[in-house]
Image (tube, rainbow, N blue to C red):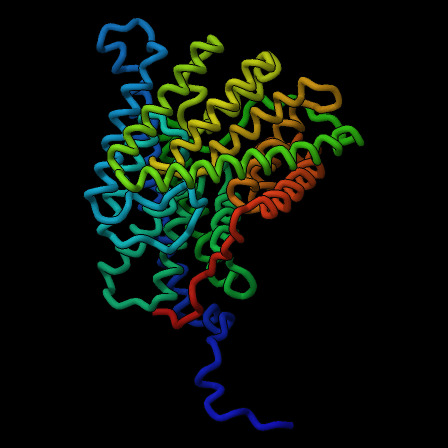
Length: 449
């Protein structure tokens, strides 16, 4: 047997299982549990404030100005003002108002405390005025940043690995109830961060603990305030048929179509982002104007509410599925085009997350295709969500779970179809991508504090 090289023990990476068995790791679990309470409460307040801003700007303000109903042109000036506020925030406050959503759900670690006000202002202005983005990315950044800031108030010098673990626990707590289940939020963060192997268990356990406690806080605050939990949920899910050959064929079609549409959205958003960043304030105002005009075009062209184009689409998924067969094919196609283009404009300039608009565009596309023979509306809805999510996010496991767990028991029926559409969309979108996707790396396995 060969002797161990000198210095090998000094250069060998730390054993994650030894770290998990240590007393310091137990202390980290306790810290994660304690942090889960205030951070989830802050996240709940952020979502409640966003909801109130949407009601204020889109409903209360027009009534206060003497309009009996919100005019179809109302989103145009509203989003111009929001674009100005977001552009000024990105231009003059520390940081860039959070991550650029056109670049996907990028998890670059918790932001420093000095950037948190800019992230919150940019997100509230974007989401409150109707930009086509979701709250998940700002919540992840705010939760992680607040967790690290809180720990540093108690201990200034913490190891990089501990900082990453604390930040992950804060992010888990912040999105614990947003996707309808703490497990869905955990899968999203786990897959987006690229964690695997022993490091997964080391980071996932405190994150799950924080998410579980955070979910309880969301439920408690929702019941106490009467505001609800702001969780993704469907209440009217039509029956799903057992998969057959025709529907498996549709899974292939939907997978390819979602990959093409998703890559088109991504490329256009990145192209617009480059133009916007040359003159941030003016560019963001112009993108706000574009989103408002697209909402106006849809409202005038379909006779339906402009809000179906605005916002993330999280709250619109349930009525879309319930009444989707009542939409004409023309109305659905106009909705898809206007929503996708507004999504591009919002990704390029505003601040928020890319998940919910991708779900909505995919769901609308699946329902539109269900007007053709051989495709059940529920199956089309689920396959569209999964395929479009993976085309935009490049997270296949999360995409399958989002599309199936959301539907309850019908989701289990259509899961084989969703898996096939997600796999096809994932492979085709990677082949269509202009550059290879980068693989994110998890936190280093350094010593705990």
